[in-house]
Length: 194
Image (cartoon, rainbow, N blue to C red; front, side, top):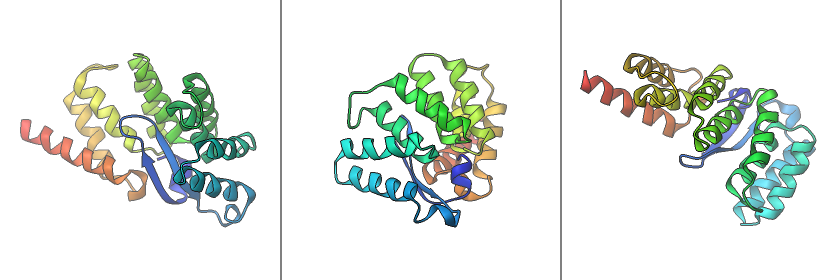
């Protein structure tokens, strides 16, 4: 995942085929107990309690203060319309701000937004940016693009390379369990077809 995940403790919730929301916290000790961390925890608790409006306000406060995880989560709420009407432009804005600070998850979410707009080449480029900052789930999306020929020239060989890289990434936390399982299954299918 992004730099924030390579040095984090926690888990990531995947929103199906849509964007990803961060449920992690940076592993650096100074973050624990900080105001940003308390806001993030309160945001998670508000979402779990079904209070999207409160979660939105807490993530907004943290995002405006420069917290990367809060930027991604705020973008996610705009993207999915939790706590307010969906606003893809605002989601893109917050995802891009988080990406500029090193978030691979944000880059992957930007790619998903471009895919939703039918801008598949742009989506492919953003999935590559996500990989560059450590989001190995994006490798699975890149492999799918290579297999389908959407946004890039079709290539089973390049798809296989991406899948192999995804399942062998270190640290293992740099890919979600669902992403790893999908990569393993796709690679098995490719091997069976050849």
